[in-house]
Image (cartoon, rainbow over all chains, first blue to last red; front, side, top):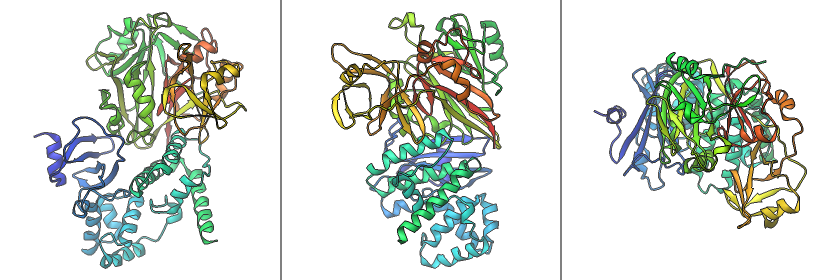
Length: 241
Length: 329
């Protein structure tokens, strides 16, 4: 059996979805599955379509990540598939569901994070989504429990993708002083593209990428994170005045 | 000064390095690369090098850069698969990629790589392979995949390396050129060949602008990417069509200015090298800096590596030195 087929079964991926490629990162203990829907394009990578990357439940000792582009014509049913997530989010619906199941069975929030190997940044995103009604209003109480269990450490964290600071960063033209070439280029590309992106999905994918950069390099970016917080306050003040 | 491991070796010493099994990025003339044994290496053709002592052209030597980390893959990419090359890279690590100059895959990378998946999220450095300047138009640059000693003129080769937790690869572009005080230039389309441009908002032929302002074409165009100066070098003006050929594409919706001349490149170079204590894993510098700034016989303190026909620090750069350092978190 091909590795893509094994992966398809482990992830519970069903037609018309297919696993086109699998990459194992042994050093980081990560499995990356690349999904397509409908007819694939053989080995051709269609880079023009913005691609999302979601953390899924672990497969054995490996953290699983799913990569795919979501077409506009997806039905609501398709969008709820457990092995994918919302375009601007960083986790699959299946992982968020697992978090709520664990919480409902009595585990504390921190225990759930440890059990599922979710870091504080991702946990915060999931909590935020549940709070905003990902699974309906009856689950918002769970999110409140998560808040009590894990006091809000927003100042120490990278703001969630839904925070207006990201849009403000990309649209206001404000400079972010940084020595990292990668961040300079990433911001330049996003600022060039942002006004031309017609739909919110493409914009949220770009914001998620920038946020992912900040999470990944947070230890090297204390000054940039301070600037981001200042920008956030500035944006809030501008909005309220 | 930061420690650097890259060095120019004779054939036998290079073979010995390959037999050690360690991951390597190699550069040399096609005649000397052709006989290398299989191993964990990628290579591209160029007979020009910066050693610790000086810039030199040698057809009988191989520049060997030993890379750190665990090999996550050595791969060749076609035009169809290249856009996904960073999806093969590990989450914590880096990639060294080499492209053959003047080919469709080189142009694809130059124009499209800023939009590739995972671009800027995973460190990538590399270079564009070339040929001896005496062989321009007669020989084709090549890249090699060392696993089976395959040679390509229409593919890119890449080596992906994973780093342990606590280590990060950092990409630096060392660019001595900065924008002058002249007018802002914009271009209608993304591409390697330019006909018209907007000069401070006024449309005119780019070749006329260069002629009217008596521009020394050794000065690149410079764009400001959130504080990073990114060059595009001018290759030639086509006398028949009046179009201007470039060594990298200009991008639509980006503002450019001509660069200020650089007085003494070799002298100024060390002050522009990245600070910090990280070990240099990879370096390269541009053939145009080698030619125009008189680097033959002179050293660029702190940086050794192949002299290349385009440099890659995420995207394609011109007239820039690229450095990859290994840093502790």
